[in-house]
Picture 1 (cartoon, helix red, strand yellow):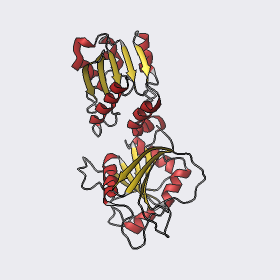
Picture 2 (cartoon, rainbow, N blue to C red):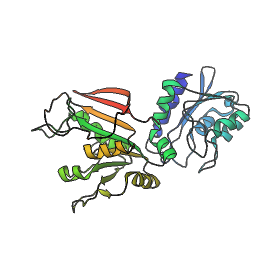
Picture 3 (cartoon, rainbow, N blue to C red):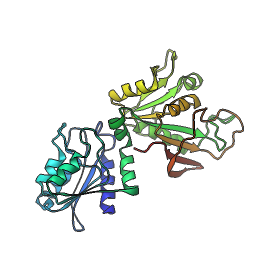
Picture 4 (cartoon, helix red, strand yellow):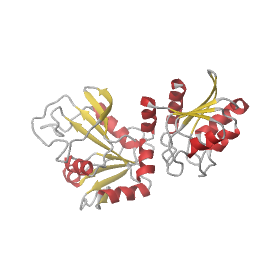
Amino acid sequence: MTDFLLRALELAERGRGTTAPNPVVGAVIVAGDEVLGEGWHEQAGGPHAEVAALEAAGERARGATLYVSLEPCAYEGRTPPCVDAVIRAGIGRVVAAAGDPNPRTDGKGFERLREAGVDVELADGDLASRARRQNEAWRTWITLGRPFVTYKAAITLDGRVKVPGSRWVTGEGSRRRVHELRAAVDAVAVGMGTVRADDPLLTARDVGARRQPRRLAFGDGPLPEDSELELVSGPLEEELARLAEEGVQSLLLEGGPTLASSFLAAGLVDKLLLFVAPRLAGSGPHFLGDFDGPLQLRFTDVEHLGADVVLTAYIREP
């Protein structure tokens, strides 16, 4: 079971960047140990993963098992409900890596399948967590009505965000990764302190970005006359709700300690990405200001990028 679900997650990634506002989804149809058909959601408005896999399997799908990265949808959108296609094809068993949190579905996909006599199984443990994280931005956007917020900081071992006499804290590999992150999110933001100190562009450069993220500055302003950033001045919760209504599912915070602490205090940070350089600054601002703690984190990944270490931790898992 695990191998086929992992394959479904792998297939889902092929739709990354082209399915918005929909999630990425992959599907595999199997009889015994033979793969009969595979599919993934390629673009919004196009066939969903289950339908693509069923078309590849054809009549052989009858009585087979469908492994899918997300619970089949049970509502009419731009395409018909996937559960209808699964039932018509005669699939005997559905194994899903994660449930669909969409309030329009709310478990109805599994319910409809069971009512039609299809066996249903939902993964748990690390595999389920991985599947939920695959669509972490969409899951937060669809359930909480705000973007999924990641706070990124480049820091020294003593927690400073600046090194005296040096332009950069981390190495070239870490800096490139930040541009990749910008290319993958809907919006990037800093605070007015960072705008005044650095006048950042916040663009994704030299990574083949398909599009540029929206570039935001939180605070009262004013922005420099030649700034291309959008000023965001209202209460954080209201502004995030507005951004979500405008289709922003993911937000990367690159601001300093004031902005980070404000988001943390409001309970609006979901994930931390800390790029840690093997350096001691000895002085300078820390990456976080004061906020009411403590906060329990769940570390999910430790990665080496050159001499740097990248730590991934969740405050709120999707």
